[in-house]
Image (cartoon, rainbow, N blue to C red):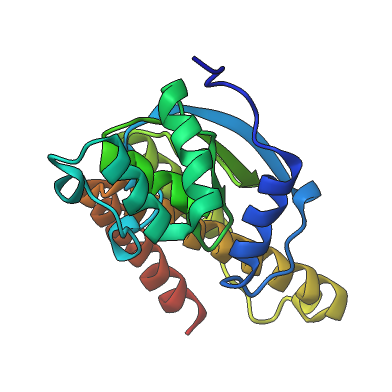
Length: 225
């Protein structure tokens, strides 16, 4: 048995970044990510990180009743003889090399190892999985009550001072630029939060998020009219 916690190769990590770069509007570099071990996951577990059913080509039903030779022939048809031989070694070892999940502010997907996921799906194997997470992304493991409290505190802080159209300092270009930049950063953080809640498929937290944020927008809109 091989070591399931062995890190992906440098080539695999770079391939993962390059794959995700094709779907991202922002420039991506490996140095901008942190690498962490997610565990030895089942194919079902991997569905929380990618819409794998959109690209899976091999399934267990297609391999039922096949002997070893027939399975190798099927793998050879899938990606060629050289790849099928490597796959045979993985199967003999009982462990597949790691796959790499990439998480940025606008996407989470399997960046490298889709062929390995196909083998795992066909043969019922688990996959060592590592994640490249873009630096600066916040962890979102909060309870619903914590989310509501956080949004309420943000609302209270934003509205604790009355809006004054006559405040000449607000017309200082430098301060306006800084305030606009901070607002943009807040919007990006909220967008990342909403996407993370969508990936978790937690409809209750997402509805609470929308309700609280909607109330905040209404209050600010009323204040500046």
